[in-house]
Length: 101
Figure 1 (cartoon, helix red, strand yellow):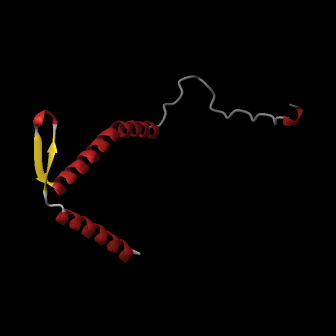
Figure 2 (cartoon, rainbow, N blue to C red):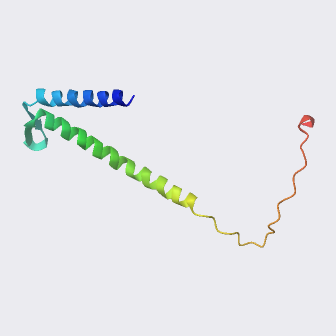
Figure 3 (spheres, rainbow, N blue to C red):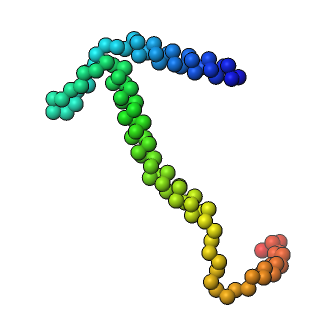
């Protein structure tokens, strides 16, 4: 199984490497106000992928922080109750007669 995974990783690498070799032509990206960027096509695709990755991570940061603070709150022990209640367990409740309802 380990060898099959290594073969799969090698196949993915060589496929992406062949993609990069076959797309070395210059491409132009036109921005607003007449600005443009000319670079090899594979570099433009890599930049777009990286920008999408960064946008996805930044979109998840608020949720990660929320879950992290909730996990920290759950890990903290609760404070002892201040009221003067007895620590004895409550007596068990009598069984309910569900057939009479």
